[in-house]
Image (cartoon, rainbow over all chains, first blue to last red; front, side):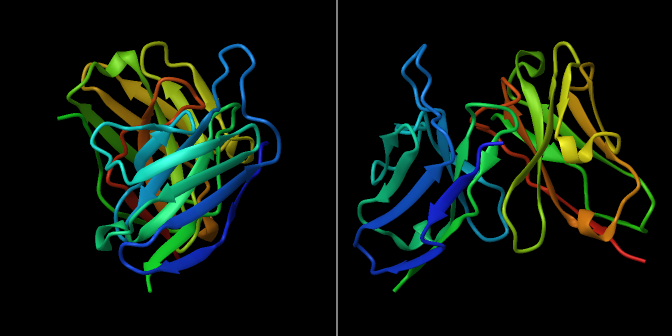
Length: 113
Length: 119
């Protein structure tokens, strides 16, 4: 199974400041056939189900604010919140869907400083 | 709108079985599959398996083989997850999620069903 490791486990950021979450996969999740990275990012607010924010490492889902961006390739990926808002307090999970079973990182808790 | 609505919370004794339902609406049920993902209290997300809504083909997590069965009823656009021989470490919130493939960026999630296993 591909192991997804996120860092840090938690971070506190001031309102309006940048938050950066890293995710590393134990093997490459870049497909040579279509040059796509099989990484998604999900946001989970307390008491709610996860919500898909980004797929293909950098493609935002419809309706997701453009302060959320994803980057990276191969084994190293990043989710950036460019200007943290109060409603962004949540746990964020990276997920690989390159191979079955799909696996998730352990989560990164984002709080307001 | 596109949504998945799950059945309510369950409390079961060790050794019992639980069956959770997930009703889809707002899209063509048979054009996608349904994955099941669980989350133990305070923990992360664990994929349990996936079923194709069109063919019924399943793919289960290795550590649940023999204890889990996933089915669908296309007449009601409902997916079911049956977990047997429950143990205390099966206590978790169980989510269904839409995915075209067994490994996919799951784009629609149910609200979750809390299953508590306790004597």
